[in-house]
Amino acid sequence: MTFNLFCLILYPYAVDRLAKLSRDSWHDPDFQDLIAGFPEETRPNAETLLAHVQDLTRRDIKAVYLKQLQGKLWKTGYEEGDLITPLFDDVVPTLEAWKNAGKTLAIFSSGSVQAQLQFFSFVRDGATTRNLKPLFAAHFDPTTAGSKLEKGSYEKICSEMGQKGAQATFLTDNIKEAEAAKDAGVYTILVDRPGNAPLAEQDRERFPVIQQLTDLP
Image (cartoon, rainbow, N blue to C red; front, side, top):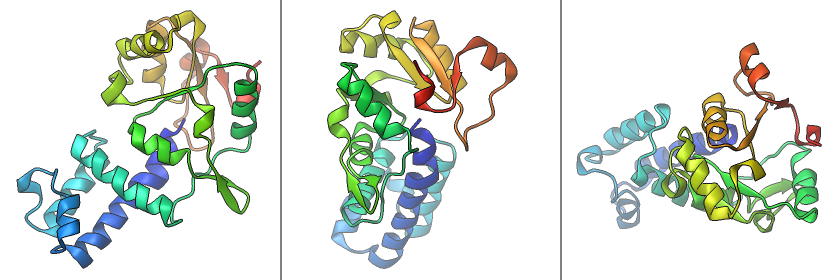
């Protein structure tokens, strides 16, 4: 469920900040250190670097060096107050209720674990922010658990969490992820939020569908 927020807010922010830094600070040693992990042929100049980053972002390529760069840019954005995480109104109260009821909460996102920790550290709370990290027992991403489209990733997460698949519930807005989790024996629910891709009728018949977390029993 964090995927849309990464796409709509965090990914564009990283590209915009990188564009500004590359224009203003290309020859600064600190900036060159920031992009040192990129393949040499992608960083002869600012235009080539930005074109490469935009291409990776558009195609949703999970290059490790791009993820590392995004994480550093997001960290600065959060610390400077440029980034604040918006969540639907039902999310925080429901997560707190689940935590207080003894449920174990974990995140599996295409965003890196580092990005997740930042994401949940600066959640909008009225005119300020609050840190939701204490609500979660674990964070997983494709580098630690595997592809979100492979059942083995969900089996690995359940094993590391000390849970059998049937004891776990996975919420997602991605039908391919839902299929992979279901194949791993995990009880899977589709979340139909505003801005998500429309769900086909056959998908609604195959999986439980909720519109907000309070729809769960």
